[in-house]
Image (cartoon, rainbow, N blue to C red; front, top):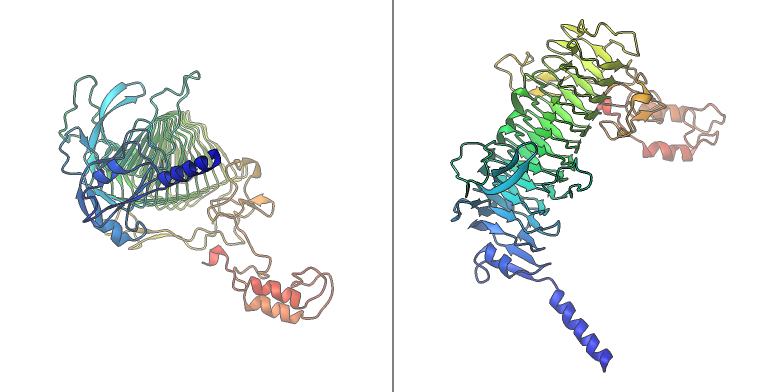
Length: 571
């Protein structure tokens, strides 16, 4: 009898735990918040296409809030949550997570617009607590780390994080007895366009307990204080920040991953594309960082500041603009590892190193920037190895102020109008493995009207094919001992060290043993050699791919598998 009773109770409990689907549509729920209020952990709230004028709160529930099809752009565009009609002036975020939600609280498939942020008390290092107006589209606080995926954020305006704002744990990491807990929100495959992190918006804090920090940071995303977000596969375009981070702002011991994003046409005083500061160490990899703008504060593409140690690897950083590090800026004792990037066609200097910073700059292609390659200022110390630096429109390839002491070896510094090295460095060509010669790229980039960027008629920069051809002097010319542990593959995700020696630049020449004449394609030339050797025997046959000292169908099968393989320099 007891066994029957226990079995019955188990069936009842399982039925009660089964996830439910709640629909926001005519005849069911009329508002999204009403459906959330009735949902239980594990439920799914499914929303019909419409414009919903709401400011919603997940209320700590591990639910999925979704449109009918997050993978259909038309459905996403037609399923709108507009937060512009909030009745509480202190709460203007379109979506709020403030009850410790985790990754199993999911927001997916909506257009999020009309948000103007909510008041939040945040703790700034060295400044103490401040009122901030945060999270125009989405606000995450009180240790919340949801999943935000496949949404469009547009037309949101607030002070901090116009698209998404995530606030972590207000604990100073320099106190070993009380280390911070790091959050890991997931922000993937969203589109952020035309969001505005601005100042002077006219909102009044709810009380005078703390000063108001009216700053304007993070046009699309802010991760603040121990937030190790996974920022993957997003389109971040045409956003604005009055001060820091036109696209992404990472601040105060926040790490995480920024990868495979398209970050373009964003604008800020500093860090037009990405701003990383205050002991933050994210991995920034495989992004396209294009046409972002920063003023003379610096960092048109990427800005790194204050004891931060990011790994910046395999990015295309092109056509960004600033008079203080158009491609990248780093300052105040920062130690980034910058490896395998294409830093090309930027309007200004490729990289600026300031404020006693000590970056490791290895195996990058830093070419065709309008004001030179790398500048070292303010007693900075850097390791510069295995790079190709040159073909600038003006300026030096490598420039250092007195007091800065870059360690420069095994680089190809070539074709810079003011000189490859300034007088403080002296000409290093022919010493410490440094060379100065045409790197032999497959093709160079060009400006759309074939003039310099100073010409007002220029439209855009078209990056070249910066793969090295096999007979390049940069082939096997680098220093293997300089390759950091983080650098296992090149810009193409191919082995960073091929045939035993590392190449200079972002690209490692990887040839194919079936490409017998090394012309970059396996085609009829190889087939002719194969037919010439058909049925021959011996130990020195070119097409003995099977390695059995004879030429037969076994070798033909292997050749057929590689038919029309094309080297990257031919593509």
